[in-house]
Image (cartoon, rainbow, N blue to C red; front, top):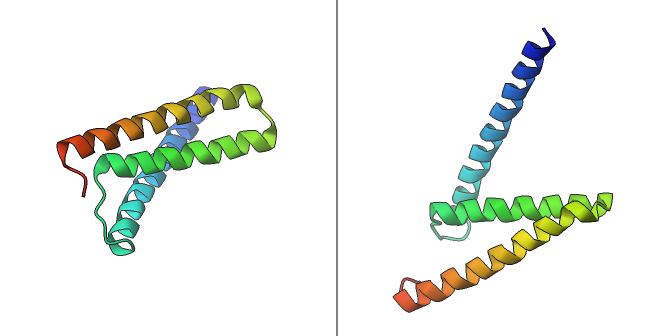
Length: 98
């Protein structure tokens, strides 16, 4: 009985997370299109979502002073910065940058 109720709670939490992610995905695309007059590609919207999640999680971990868990997040952020620079250089070489 406890397993079934726990499973239902887990499915409800996953469904709520998916719904919130979809809502944020379309909200970011709408704001960029209407507010900034720029149409973002799918990977750019997902990158904004990942950056927002990492920044909020790192702020939460700093407040809780959980330094051991914060280290992988900081390493992931530095890797994403390097990937962003590489992609920007590649787009400049290919001439796709607007």
